[in-house]
Length: 122
Image 1 (cartoon, rainbow, N blue to C red):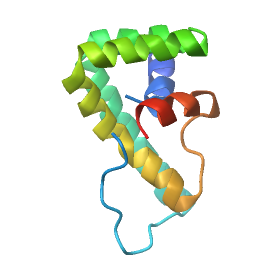
Image 2 (image 1 turned 60 degrees about the horizontal axis):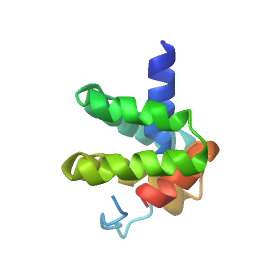
Image 3 (image 1 turned 180 degrees about the vertical axis):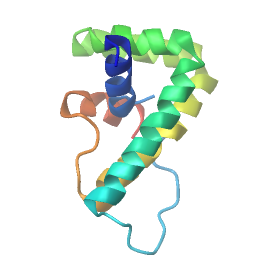
């Protein structure tokens, strides 16, 4: 796995470029470790595929991952303002991570990126 894929994959899982507007099902979610892993893997694959088709967004996330928090927040905010549809698309892909964390009480977003997820996705 290349460094680019590792950084991008970590950023995808952590960033967060949708509110948690998706309805929550009334049935209890499957929070078994296998189910959580499967959901996170699926979301990560979707996000990676999206970013592979949007190289400017991918580059922005890689840049933000290497910046101090305040500078990274500005980088993400500027990109989101300039690319609102891409931002909305990415948020909708990542939103289930927030739902999963809340419903199952597990940490699925890497801790170092939780601030960005909270600010830009959830």
